[in-house]
Image (cartoon, rainbow, N blue to C red):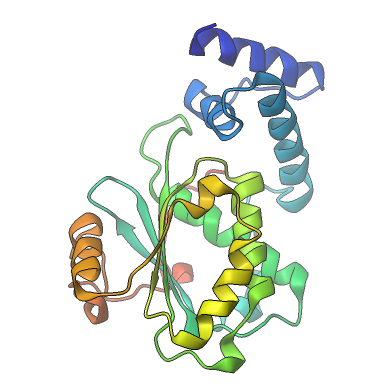
Length: 241
């Protein structure tokens, strides 16, 4: 069975569950197949779960900023433009993050951030293979910033509902005391996700990130030329899931 046949079969299985796939192009369907190792039945199950989740979590198509004011107020998430490969670059300053008191708002904030990041890479009429590069900067974090639950939540949302959206995740300036935290968090990551996480430990690796991502989108403090742009300050012509 070739990929075209797999996609057609996937559409049929999804539509048997009463869910239309008409507005989703082949690249979108293909992401679910890749995420489930080209197993059509598993991909269909994932797609149905994703659609039901979107209907519940994002009933209006996008998270309204009024729903996540506390999280936005920290100004910890930045949307930096596109890498050399056309991937949207999302930058998180760990020193500005604190464990959420309201887990529902935090989840909505993660969804808002992922949706907006993916939409910023969206160029055509059809939602397809837009991906993101996540950069987690742990410089100057202290124990009060440590939030294993938050990290696990972010990665689990990414794995379950944003298949094949993560191109790479760089972790910068990891302090020694954070190693055990990351070891615990990584147990909750799927192998495919873990393989995309790069812990940057030396100057050569830092230069590699600058080369891959590009000076024009990386902030000055990481060897680039850009200013950090808080995600809520970025205006997009449209938002797409």
